[in-house]
Image 1: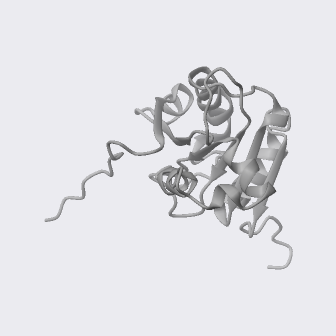
Image 2: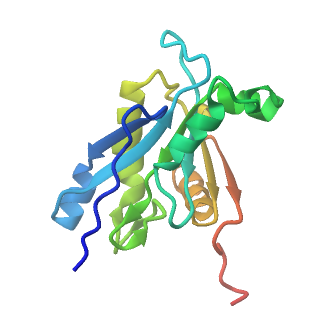
Length: 182
């Protein structure tokens, strides 16, 4: 008796929404599948300069809408920009929050028999499109991963599976990566 409306990107958001149709995932699932990312530009963005990117995979329940909060915290009136080296690094990069959710839950961006070629779709479709739209440095050392919880597992998996795509990962509190203790 109730209908839930899809979440929509707010107009005037300080972050951009990038949404593309994934050929790989659409063919796998035999229906239209889209990849989404929230993109936060560097503080003092200069379109004539190239930038590194931090790709964040949110934990279970998180999505690309997290980019809006990051953009607010990075805003011109934010004190975080002056906090030191870490904040300066974050402020001088593109921060890209990926949308990991699917009808099966969190895809983990892992290629699997259930979810399909999610990692390949990210690496072969979404990242090239982001690098086409924005002045991103298209080299592994300029593509950094960050994830917490299920996102931590995802970023660890992506770094190990696609070492020629990503240069480093910060995976905090990842879901179990070794089940021998269970």
